Image 1 (cartoon, rainbow, N blue to C red):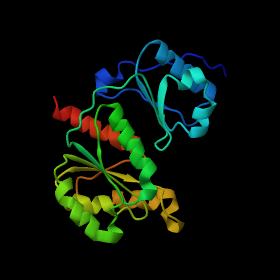
Image 2 (tube, one colour):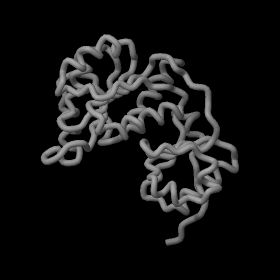
Image 3 (spheres, rainbow, N blue to C red):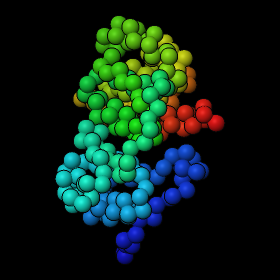
Image 4 (tube, one colour):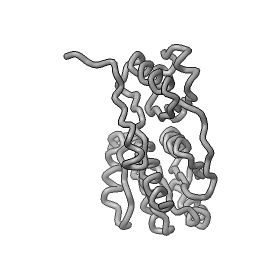
Length: 221
C-alpha cells in the first residue's frame, strides 16, 4: 500500500460545524507529525494537536517544536499564535480527584484553543459530599459544566441534580479492579437517573470541550 505524504486537512470544517479539524497525534509517527506541523506553519494557520506525548514532542526537530506551544500535562500542542480569550463565567470544569488532572487539562486547553478560559474546580468528588454541596452555589452560575470523574463516576449525576447547567460528563480510567479502565464509570453515567446529561467517551476531555464549544456557538448566534 502506498501512502501519500500530503496532509489532506478539512479546511472548511469550522465553517460547517464551528470546530476545526484538530490533529490526533496518538498512533502517528514523529515524521508524520513533523510534516503536518510544517505544512500548517508554512501556511500560517492555527491548529490544535491532541494526545501528543512528551516522548513524541521531544523527538520532533527543533524547527518543529519552536513553532508550537506544548503542554505536557494535557499532551496538547498549538501551532500558531495566541488569540484573544473570553474570561466570562461560561464553562466550569469539575473533577472528582487530582488523579483526573490530565483529562481536566485536556478539556481546559481545548477550550483555550477556541478562545474560552474555563474555571476549574478540582477534587470535589462525592466521597466528601459536602464539597460538592458547598461548590453548587458557585457552579450554578455557569451555563456549562464539564464533570470529570472515575471510579463509579457519581459526580456528574450528583451535580446534575443540584444545578440547572448543561452537564457534560467525562468518565475516566482512574480506578482499579472492576472499574475496568473506565468502563464501569461509562456504564454508570449512561444509566444515570438524572435526565439530560451528555456523556462522552472514557478520558475524552477533548470531546467534552468540543461539545461545550458547540453549545457556546449556538448561544452566540
